[in-house]
Length: 153
Image (cartoon, rainbow, N blue to C red; front, side):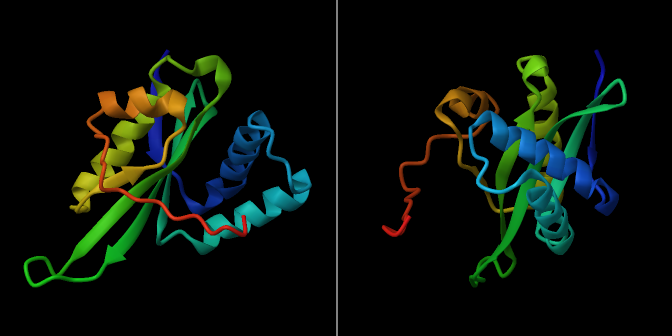
């Protein structure tokens, strides 16, 4: 099995939307009607091309996974006037190809992009099941990372 990973382009937006729907469906999150969600996500993807870089994995011409690198600018400092960071988001591999190297290939592409862009650091908010995957690939548990969630949720 040969896994190919590439940066997604605008024309891939509908395919990315379908993968995101499938990911959400597996988790039981279907708050929106499918067609409405696909339209919304496709538009959202096009609106966020500058800040959210999508990567697609293909096996035998079939799209089997995606990963996103969200880019953010931080407040400049005297030592580092260009402080950009990244956040890995929505990594998804179709169930039948999990643990077959697809996720690793996607993450490798995302982190190569982060290196090329000289990002200060990259974070990921992971499910418990995927934490070992990220730790094996060089992420570390950062005790200074704090999270605030509004009570209204």
